[in-house]
Image 1 (tube, rainbow, N blue to C red):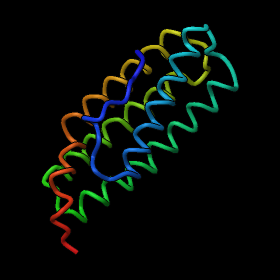
Image 2 (image 1 turned 30 degrees about the horizontal axis):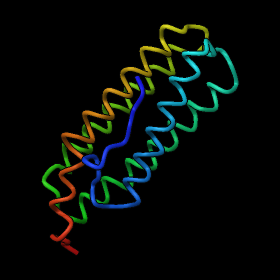
Image 3 (image 1 turned 135 degrees about the vertical axis):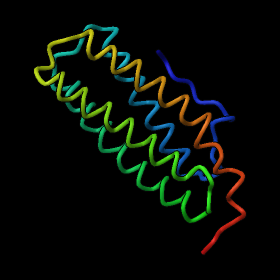
Image 4 (image 1 turned 60 degrees about the vertical axis):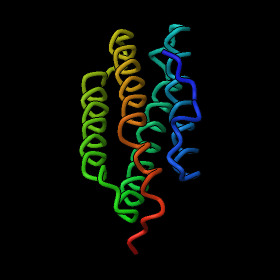
Length: 135
């Protein structure tokens, strides 16, 4: 799965949109490693670590932004973020020996699919809330 950024994914918050593009790039980089058969390497380990850190940082900033702008999707957004973090942590636990290409490919597909669906159905609601700053 290769992720391509589309203008329709924009939230209206440039920093969040740039973070989304960065997460797309990490998912795509993971896909490239899988295609090349590289799954038991320090490169994969580092990429997974970067992905986890970037996602957690992004989630914290995005959740705060939705709360500041009184976005009605804020709670759903937080719940879905917790869902992806759970998927990520479960994957890391199951993939502890970094030996299973199928597990890595499954995580790649799940993360990419989740990301597209989440941005399209939750994150984009932020656009309509930007003028309603509550604080």
